[in-house]
Image 1: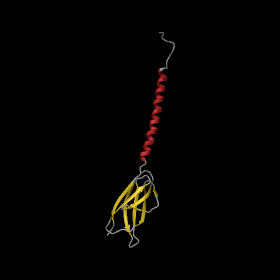
Image 2: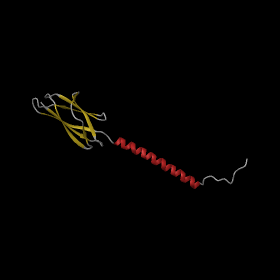
Image 3: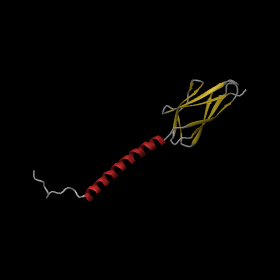
Image 4: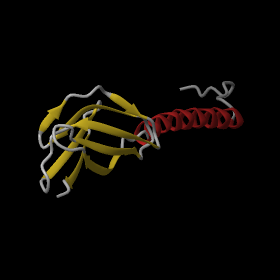
Length: 134
């Protein structure tokens, strides 16, 4: 068998440059992928119901719900429930780091417990319990 001494492979310098280029390209691809995952998980939907106020008298009773969006993305509220009874509302959006006051006509009973539930467009549920004044 004849050994080919006249044929040369890549020089070590060229081989090192190619390895570095491939490593940098893979690193950029992984960084872009991780960045996309991070931004997806960072956009959180977090609603905090801070207060439920009962007011009115007779047939003009109402409930006012104070809502704060403490998350990093806007939240659209599609449904509003009081004691497992769906209330008729128009959906509304609360911007990140802002609040909203939801007023609803509701015939409440003094001293009774009420559970308020909000349902977002993404399917997240947020609860708050309050007792009506006596």
